[in-house]
Image (cartoon, rainbow, N blue to C red; front, side, top):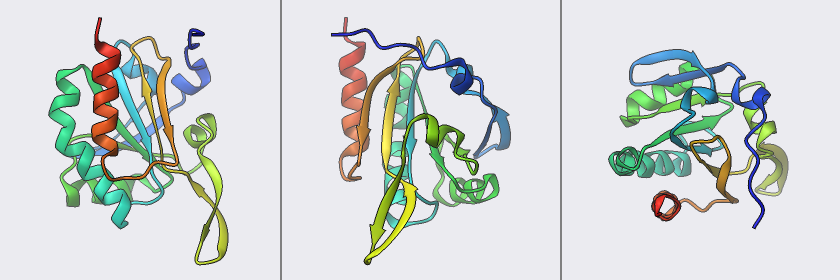
Amino acid sequence: MATAKPLPRKVLDAPLALAGKDGTREATLSDHAGRWLVLYFYPKDNTPGCTTEGRDFAALLPKFRKLGADILGVSRDSARSHQNFCDKQGFGFELVSDPDETLCNAFEVIKEKQLYGRKYIGIERSTFLIDPESRVAQSWRGVKVPGHAQAVLDALTSHRKP
């Protein structure tokens, strides 16, 4: 099995706008170096699937933190929209506003999608488990929400076993 390469510096050091229960702030992915990071991409705030996914990760947040992992959700919504979404849902983790698609393009999650026969470009629901050395340890693409947060927690548990 080939060793995964660390994410490029331009991805790790890109300035990000984060929103959460404590307001908004700027940060980078490299701020999470030395810890596990669950980076999940979702299409839109306040939609049924995205709300369920966020709630599922929030419900398991204490278990993720006990294993030394942080969680960040990413969509193209504004920081203000993220702030309202976090406040409404009570998420204990932050959401990244990526309107210019910096992270979305770096992780190649922008795809052509179809809804009711109409084609459009949007975020393919995807999750990346990033290890403490900033390497992608595991990825999930085309995610179906039911059971996904638990599957990510199970994978983290497996990766942390000696």
